[in-house]
Length: 285
Image (cartoon, rainbow, N blue to C red):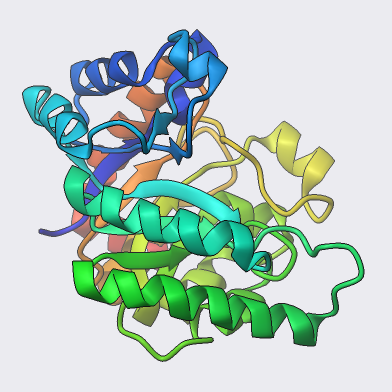
């Protein structure tokens, strides 16, 4: 495929609705790809139908059937866990990889988490290498990518992101680039995107409002959701031009806060993707 537009199920969180409702709403808006979030065990809000996260205790083929019934595919799984804590992350990632295979998602997206108390960088790198090595043993067998996202203590910089994404030599260890998180962390998201383009497997299309930019840039390492794509600081024509130049064939997974923002994001990104000449012109201007 070429570049497609999907949506992270975070957009339905503001409605206090369950996963199935988010899937149906995404299809109604016009999306063809969604990015579910998964968790272990049973979680009260999800069980009660007030939250969109999916338990990996559920049958993944049933989740896949629900997506297919709504004309959708999974672009990836949001499976964030602290890579610096292997006692948590090894079993969690291994399970998420198997679940992704059943659902039909080609990648599980994660990040390194926050430094545990008293841990230095050298120890953190050793532990993350172990975690990723164990997770990749499963990923390689199932043909599922692990996408490292810029989101936390080390990955907030492009240098740190590349350091984690190359800790283990494997074609299944890649990058899920998040434009909004990179921007809020103080990075140039366009330079960062170019720097990791050879490792891209998935992209979070997250825009940042002017208000959030002025109050939080350089102060945080990420944010759960952004504003509608096209309403904030990210130049999406420039992003698309970089992705096309790199030969990226995958999904731009929108991360925004409401169904209305999801609808406007889809219209904005589709309009740019439909006019490559205009995108290239905007990127050079």
